[in-house]
Image 1 (cartoon, rainbow, N blue to C red):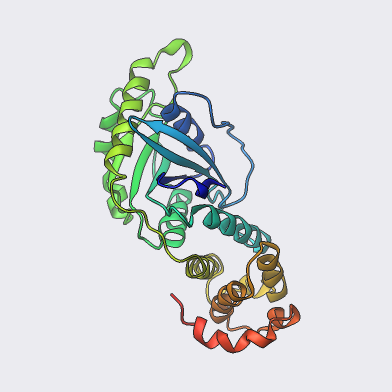
Image 2: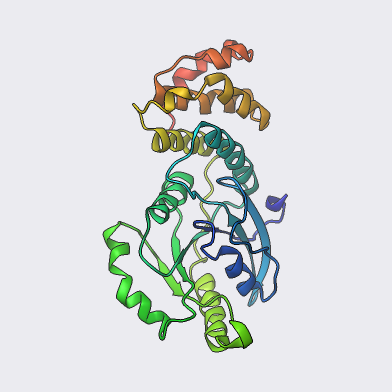
Length: 287
């Protein structure tokens, strides 16, 4: 398990598929450790980690799958639950030190805004600093010039960025962009070393899961949306049980979600959790 190695900061790379996360990891590592594929498959919150040395330190870089569609359907939400639970279990001991938001050079798309909210607001409760990494700038005369010309929309959309790097992750055919490639690696080293000095964010696991999955449901389906009503409590409870959640974790999480949906506890009762439903009145008000 990744979390069994103490003292290594977890850095979460996120962004839409094709935003250059895997290429960025390979750039920092100086080797092809992460598989790159424009059409890489995966589910939201899927994550693969890589241990990467930088100077005298070692970082665990997480290549995650973001949200490529405007929203999740019910099946997508249930799969995201499973992936989120696994990711949180891998992260719970060392926490999260830094988020790296990867976005291709160009305008800020709706997908970029959705992924920002998914990871900064929902996964990390606005508690983890974000560094912005703008990729695919190999053909720009000045990579930093792109930022000067395009930084205002990030402020306008309310994105809270602690640092940025405009990069060329690929040296190009015949190493035509080799100078920018070398410059990029140095930028990423400086960004990592300067933005990972603070203490990692490490919430309690059950509280983390409860808040994340409840907020994900509310954001994705809305309090009064008809799509939310199609999320069966039996499916939800079975999904939590399948992921190895304890009875207490299941009740905490399901209570939060049921509270949002104004539903009933039938799924929990059918799984034999009726004896513990009295505790719902307490956990209902968890953040």
